[in-house]
Image 1 (cartoon, rainbow, N blue to C red):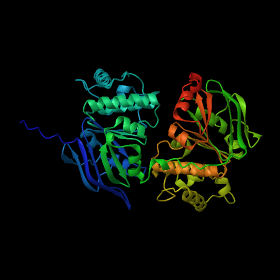
Image 2 (cartoon, rainbow, N blue to C red):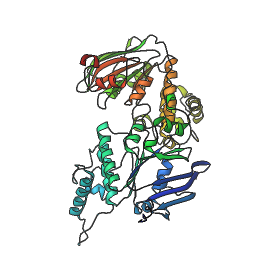
Image 3 (tube, one colour):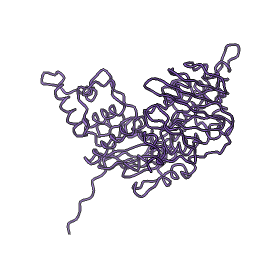
Length: 508
């Protein structure tokens, strides 16, 4: 009987790694094994240690204790260049390319091949770029300018850059957060191609449908510690959620039943050429109304127009029965409207400013005394909302950029709830945040509706729409194609309307 050779050691392995920042223990006894030809998911709440683990793999942080092994040999990543030499590459959610350079120039930036005359060998750059895109099955030309590329194509350029560096371990950190469904599926095709070619992939996502559709094994982490690692086929969503947060998925949508009150928001015939047309609906006190639909349906554009960020060509908006002037966010705020935008980092926060300053930025006039605003007044106002929203932070004077994504979202919510609105617009309220914080945000929105607030929620997550909304308005190509009450809305009826199909009853 022929004896089988022992399996090759994994290209990268973390063994009982620990990392602390002052008194905060970010990682403790963390272990992770990344195997060639496998897509490995890493899941956990925000603050569970995922980002610190990725930075340790990438050579940004050095572990305080434990080991990193490459091909079974202990290694030290003192800086990112060490990790790159070991074949490790990280693809971030939002790549940073040089917009004035071509795709090939971005791929070889800082390491351009040279001719015999020591000039840049542009022919070789183009040739190798074409080869790697052919390997990925991606029709992207080497001379294409980086300016204007979609986020999805920018990520593919970063993957190509990693492969030209002979990367054997690819870390994909929330890669689909800003992608459409079609773009995400193309990225998954590339990921599967790389897996089949022997690359080890680490996939980090809060979207369980992606994790289970794409990944071979799932590692769960909680509070900086390893919890479990199992084949994806042996797990289900409820098991993973319980391991992440200690409670079941049934608590994710704690919808509080309310009796709708008077109409607070009336929208009639709202039209903007080429964007949305004939939008009309009402929202009552105590109601959560969801705007559902596919990416590009015009949902965010409608909300921005209602709040006065964008103008519209025709139609009217009334708040509490009074007509609202268009194109004037200050007038919208004075009328009792508040908007939590889709992109919290670019539109909702000043990332370099403190937590307290961000949370009080909508009430600076009200908090001032004789024209002066003290940091004490900022801190006191922020602290009260921080307690209500269970905000996790070290110091209120820390930059808001130091918070996790979920806690950043809470700061944006605090900023707008502090204005005492009667109508709250929330655009993708739980995008990019972990399942535990999602439940907290959902509980907050439900509680606010119970107190009489009217909530208009834009969401691309169907379970969130179905779990939280009293009514669902479905949009397709700028028009409302269906209005569904909570008891009649399900995934099929929403998707029929979102794709412009006639209702199911009409097909029978």
